[in-house]
Length: 252
Image (cartoon, rainbow, N blue to C red; front, side, top):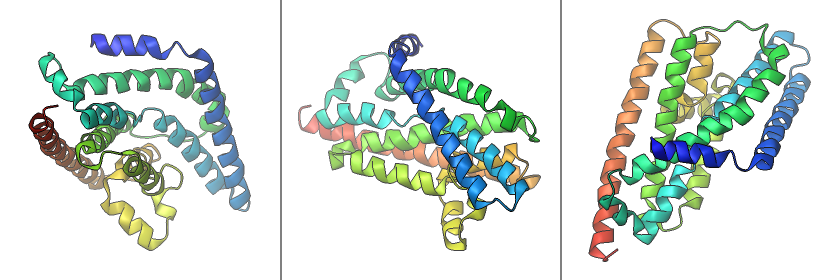
């Protein structure tokens, strides 16, 4: 974990960038709160729910960093990742430790201040299944890392990965429940969101937190989440081998 420590230490160097990122997060939350107050001005209970949902969703977003796709993609497209085979740690582990360090620093610098500032709007809520929420967030982090690592490894085939990365980011924004709860999406979009794995990044942890999912549904959702993680592990392994084969054949 030495690479994690070095990356974490380096991530605190750019203090002004962190300050403005934190300020930006607070501003986004405030604008969203004003939006929900305007849309649900006749429904106080819904306003309170959406305020808590918005704040917690933005805090959760800080544990998700998609940068691993760029880290892996840059090495794969150039063939440089073959050199990493000579090292005692593989390209995925190196990239993940770097991203984990960014996640920790981002949560400390942005997540904690946001939580403290918006405590007056959070403390009246009823929160449930805290340990299950933490487990869901850990598994969600793993799922997101695997999704973006796959995009990075696909660089051997598509060269420029940013369009695919942008597509995935927009899809997550719509179908993960990061901005809108999936429950209030139109029927067709809700059906799509239920099938895709992205709902486990935001919607599932928040539903657990606000006691919107209970009983056997919790276990079923965890099993589906684990199944998706296994699927992306297999996909990463397959695409990694394909990228490695191409790099070796081309003399990379």
